Image (tube, rainbow, N blue to C red; front, side, top):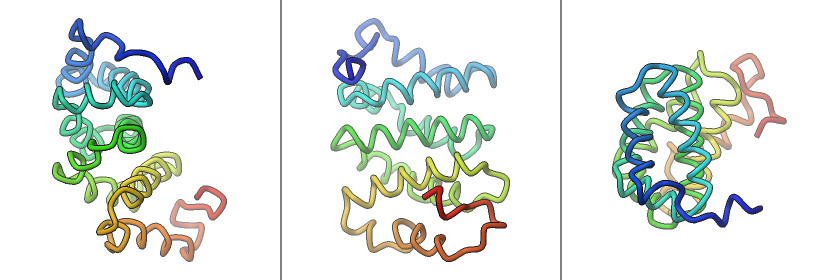
Length: 160
């Protein structure tokens, strides 16, 4: 699609930095909007690199850990997109504690199915980029073990 091939949107004019600032320090609504835009921008490798270079990984991990349900979902989606499309961003996610935060989201009792699924997808992307994470209990094996859990815990077999 056309949006995947765009140049980094607004990064030269400081747009990514503004979005990261809003995701970190904005109102609750601004954090949701900024995280949503960052998630969409992160579908492009150049944008993902720009987000990471501007300190976005740490901000998104913080939002995924401490935000509202919607903020967590969007931040996890942005991280997932970054990991998927831009080689090298996965290292920043791992170093900033992203595996623990994303793993926690997959098990959070109050999280929606969509939030859990987005976090799980991010972990799968990480496991695909690093063999050590694929063997780690906090990553792919956690996701596989969840398939045997009853539906009452918020997961559905057809969601994964």
